[in-house]
Length: 301
Image (tube, rainbow, N blue to C red):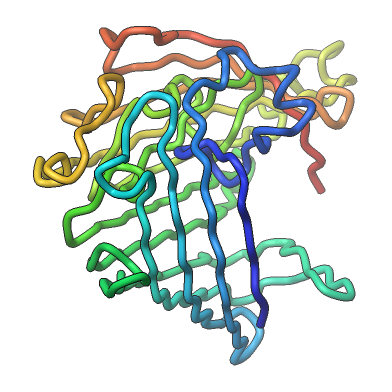
């Protein structure tokens, strides 16, 4: 059990694996100015119970205020949006292994699918929360071995919101405006480009493990590993949300699926990976790139 408190600027629509906005590498490798930041205050109390290894529940109570930013006006709401959510999450990871420290533990993954279900209820009450809503989410990830052909990883995620909310409380799809590859974001999508209230996404990567490069004598000694990947998200949004607060001009609903795909080389000097990839839809949106080369660091076991 524990309590978390935050009062800081943040980039809404940034993935969990992205550099924080004040990280030195994020600052050096940024490809666009951070001009869409929001001030947020959040306090969370949680209790987690692991019933047996790989099966756990977490109950959380989260109060969150999102304050007005430089491109919008929340003065009709006192300058910020206030919400309080009770959340119940269930995580199922059979056969998962960990490295355990004094206060934290790091998952080493599982050979079986890892699933997570979450339900959140927004409480509407004076001085507690301004909105009543229901939020459902589900994700599933798995690694599949293919004898002699390497292995694949896929990640499926889905979510739906019932109730009308201002856009900072909806699902702003995770973009990436750094010169690094982020496996949990859409790397050619800008921040605050798309927002949805229901979606299904799929990330798929196949690792050939040197299937082709090992047939080239000189390249084989370098131990490079090739991979291909694709990402897509299908979603929509109801127009009722804009009755609370109109969207900024650069933020739109996802009226057709978004896709991107690419290929990469990893295990370069044991820690580097480089990817080349293309944006395959919404090609007429302003200020976008349709092709990119990105690097990242990783340690694989």
